[in-house]
Image 1 (cartoon, one colour):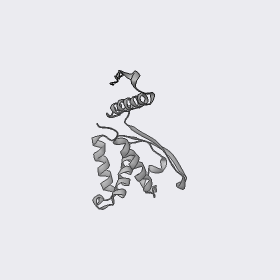
Image 2 (cartoon, helix red, strand yellow):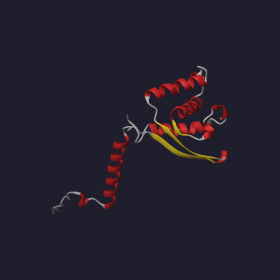
Image 3 (cartoon, helix red, strand yellow):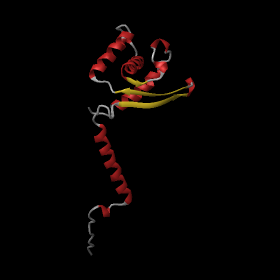
Image 4 (cartoon, helix red, strand yellow):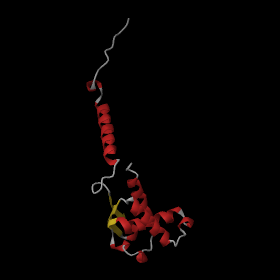
Length: 142
C-alpha cells in the first residue's frame, strides 16, 4: 500500500517558529548590509556609557571613527607617549595608550578627566574602552 503525501508549498507549510526564525535571519542580514559601510555623519560615532563603580566613575564617551589621516596621527601620538619605544610595550599597555590618543584626536564628547593625560593614573579604563571601540569598528567592512 503506497501512501501519497502532498508536499506543502509556500510559507503556509512552515511552522510559526520557523517563520519567526526566517524573519530573524532576514532582519540580521538587512542590518548587516546597513552596517557594513561607514556613512560620514550618520554611523561614524562610537557612543557608549560606562560605569566603573569601584572608581566611583560614570561617563558617556563619543568618539568619531578615525580616518586614515587620523589613524596616522594616533599612531604618531602613541609613539610620542613612549618616546619611540612603543614596540617594547606589552600589548595591553600599547592598546590602552593608543585608545588615549584616539580619544584625544577623535573624541567628540569626552569626560573632563580624560582631557589632560598628566592627570590620568589608571590606564585599565582605556583598555576596556579600546576593546569596545575595536568591536564597534569591526562591525564595518568599509
